[in-house]
Amino acid sequence: MTSPLRQGELAEPIVVKVALGARAYDIVIGRGLLTGLGERIAALRPGAKCAILTDATVAKHHLAATEAALKAAAVPSSAIVVPEGEGSKSFATFESVCEQIIAARIERSDLVVALGGGVIGDLAGFAAASVRRGLDFVQVPTTLLAQVDSSVGGKTGINSRHGKNLIGAFHQPILVIADTALLDTLPAREFRAGYAEVAKYGLLGDAGFFAWLEANWRDVFAGGPARERAIAVCCRAKAAIVARDERETGERALLNLGHTFGHALEAGCGFSSRLLHGEAVALGMALAFEFSARKGLIGEAEAARARAHLAGVGLPTHLKEVPGGVPGLDALMDLIAQDKKVKRGKLTFILVRGIGSAFVENDVSAAEVRAFLADKLSQQ
Ligand SMILES: NC(=O)c1ccc[n+]([C@@H]2O[C@H](COP(=O)([O-])OP(=O)(O)OC[C@H]3O[C@@H](n4cnc5c(N)ncnc54)[C@H](O)[C@@H]3O)[C@@H](O)[C@H]2O)c1
Ligand SMILES: [Zn+2]
Image (tube, rainbow, N blue to C red; front, side, top):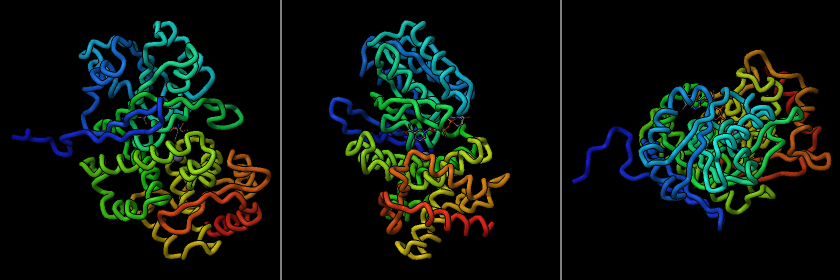
């Protein structure tokens, strides 16, 4: 007899394997997985203790349950709580976190657990990569963005005064536990912003998934099994790309679809709550599709279809939707030129030959981008 399931609960978690040889690891996806965290950690690293890094908001919602899950499996833990927000990806917070990990007597055989969104994952991963020349770490992502993107693939780091994510290391986790129930406490706007990255996987490489999202996005938002399925599709896509191109020398750049325009807009808004990362990516993807249409790579209808889905879930797709407005043309072009995806004066963009077929174009002329953005700004 099968036991009755709560609505949305899966009988078996979904396991996605990240095939990186000696650094291979599992991403486990399912509702309610947090309670088994301690057992999984004890099985992977018997006798290890954990430093849990989290932010103040996530701590309020999920730290006690995390500590209880570790305690239940006799895994000793201590917690390090930093302020929430991008400001914690700083040298000052990094220093404080490293010192606290050392003070908690976390040794080479112990673990760091990142309990939080992308900010915590990036900070914890970089601290783990650095303390004692490298500690193992486990990701417990608590935002949709972190579950489908930042917790997978091993990019870790903090921000420089010169730009975002300029100081860091590739350091793969040994396990990712994506408990989709943790997303139930996420503010709706944060969930929606993370959904932009979900749609990104369809738009860049999987037309079938995009069509499925068009039909099922409401269930993904509602939190039933469609949410697990969508997260699993994204993790599988990212895992496959990362396994083929761990250090972003080629294909991994496709994951930057919408990010060149997006980063410029995000920076132009001072990385403030006016425009969340995922919102900037939604806008950036709408622009990338339109730019591709303008270059004759796709028809207008296909660009309109991509935009319609993003707009349909409530994401911004027009520059005029950014509260407080966007920077002017010169400022936007400067920001695009500063982006790290610029090589020898030519701009690199991820363009599309259709929904589900993105490619890296290294030879986009700045003048063409400028003319395109001038049109878009004049339409505001
Ligand atoms: N390493 C990578 O590959 C990679 C990829 C994409 C993004 N990133 C980084 O990720 C960061 C953005 O991540 P994010 O969008 O997850 O932001 P975040 O970590 O700041 O989380 C967003 C907000 O949601 C709150 N929150 C998190 N989980 C919650 C929950 N379950 N319930 C209630 N509130 C919760 C946080 O306190 C925060 O205020 C950026 O710094 C970006 O550079 C990294
Ligand atoms: Zn992104």
